[in-house]
Image 1: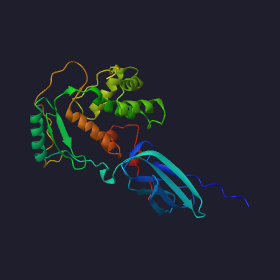
Image 2: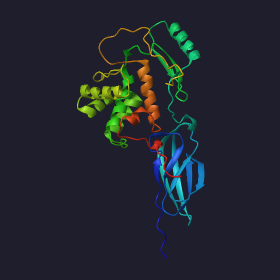
Image 3: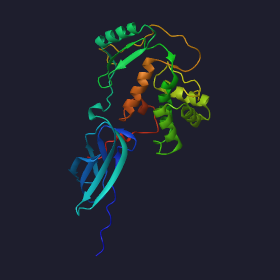
Image 4: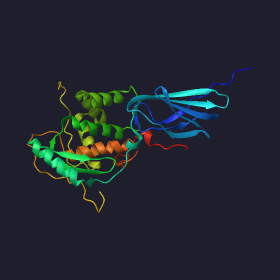
Length: 291
């Protein structure tokens, strides 16, 4: 008697390798699957019967990089496995939510005190991304931006791509070097990849920031490569209390940087202004496939 053919591995929709995950595991199982088992690292995080082929369940993840293994089991007890790694686990209750900014009066007094103690010129913008409450001090003042605008380069690259960069491709390697190591040469190479030169690439980065409403930030050419709100609630104020002096070059504000980081945070769950720009990429975490 011939052995039965091997059971094909389950197709995983979320999470994808090298992505953050708030615990959603979803995909499509091979025909005949009766049970899905999910391992997080070495431990079984979920074991559930399956009706149909689509599955979508939440598991508890530990913080930091881990491995997720999804096992499909059919009626003959045949098994097939798909492994996703690395996955960067985050608590489920940190799943992004869109909240209008609301002024927190107590926090506002605290940061004014901290700014006064500092003595120099500072810009502060603080917001709880879960509740929207926050405060600001001198958040509209422009400061030399330096490497902080590398986040805007990354957002523009992802906006330009028609899909997430595949692992081990040039763009993927450059993004990793720029974001993890703050590598200036990688940032310049990505600007050249965007538009043929660092100056033309900067124009695209600036267009992305303007589309997000970030009007007080400027990407100015490349980097040196030598070592080195609700109607009834007050919104978080963005004013200029004092402005540091500096020459020509990149600049940004505390408010613009905070809003850019918030946009990336929301995009991790398929929400927020980046998705409304008509970008060509979608995080798999945003999918809600199956039952």
